[in-house]
Amino acid sequence: MKSKWRVPHPATMFFLLTLAVVFLSWICDIYGVKVTLPQSGEDIRVQSLLSPEGIRWWLRNAIGNFTGFAPLGMVIIAMFGLGVAIHSGFIDACIRIGVGKRQGKRKIIIWVIILGLLSNVIGDGGYIILLPIAAMLFQWVGLHPIAGIVTAYVSVACGYSANVVLSTMDPLLAHTTQEAALVQTGYQGNTEPLCNYFFMSASTVVIAAIVYWVTQKFLIPALGKYEGNVRMEAYRPLSRKERRALTLAVIVAGIYTTLILWLTFSSYGILRGVNGGLMHSPFIAGILFLLSLGAGFTGMAYGFGSGRYRSDNDVIDGLTQPIKLLGVYFVIAFFAAQMFACFEYSHLDKCFAIMGAELLSSYEPSPLLTLVLFILFTALINLIMVSATSKWAFMSFIFIPMFAQMGITPDVTQCAFRIGDSSTNAITPFLFYMPLVLTYMRQYNKQITYGSLLKYTWRYSLCILAAWTALFVIWYLLKLPMGL
Image (tube, rainbow, N blue to C red; front, side, top):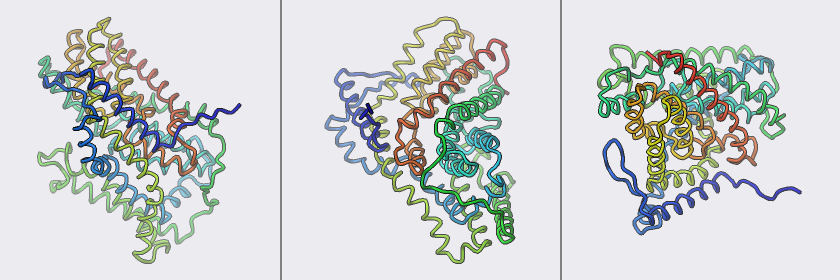
């Protein structure tokens, strides 16, 4: 007998989660649940969303919660440039000349995984830009496009801390680590941005291998052959005019990239920060806009060069193309934004995380076992509080002193935190980009829900958490340096 139970639409799911947050905040407020922030000593009490003040807060901020939703502006801006690149035929031309006659499935899977793991160099851009391109690449070689989205998604999400180059996350976490180490322990050792570089570089290879194995063994067979309505054109080689247009587009992209690098790294350097560094610089803050602008210029060059674009009206058509897809995203994002805002207002996330951290810190077995428990605890807390910087802002002041008493240095503690923080990113409904991921997937299958995504991603998170923790244990026992 067929079960009548089904997972609701993503927008409905976020609405129900909001109701759950409201209910929990009411219960916790009745019992006076509160915690103390370790870094400041400030008491934080759960605020009820059903209190008069909570209701007034929501009415005052309902619109602002949506318009201020962190990913919303970034998604729109990034999709403008990506829309022109796709609408002009530039992405299609790159796929046709790069992949050829729909061969090399393994090569495409590997490239998507590598690009996903390296995407944290540009912050959250991988969620927005890579996922739709991965779907096109997978479909081009005869694989299910949703498999491409899932593969790219888990590579970006679960591998968010792993990279072979410095990412945007490294200096942010290192700064907090240094503050906690100096204030609580007076530790003067290695808390620089590259203090986990060696371990995270090795982790990149391990995570890539796991994602590839799970994709080949479980994901692709589970999805089978795609039989939806989104079709790819039959392969045809690039014409002479298209090749000239592609050459022009590459030249424009090269000139644009050279200009941006010159404005950033030359003595002129107007895109660097006021202190001459890249941290908090206009380059880092505007990297997604710069990528979108570059994609737009490149797409325009190809469009006009190939004859597909003849006037500015054609360019505007390319800019508006993604809005058709984003209509569904706006609806899902509205309910998600309310849920995230209510969760933050209630302080439930901080209270649960700090209470759990204090409970773990009271249990002190051997140092290595405590580190493993810390990784598992962080992975669990990450399911409700995804922001790595927000979690580490208070967890560092609890666990760095605790582990220091066991002889464990802050760089090792930070490394353990990053493992747990990244491993479960792909399965939490509280990820800011979850609405966008579901929107991309529903483009190919209208029945996709969060339950569908969870069914495809739980193996990735579990395998990555287990293998990454095992690598950490081996690294620790061999007493290898974590970084530079």
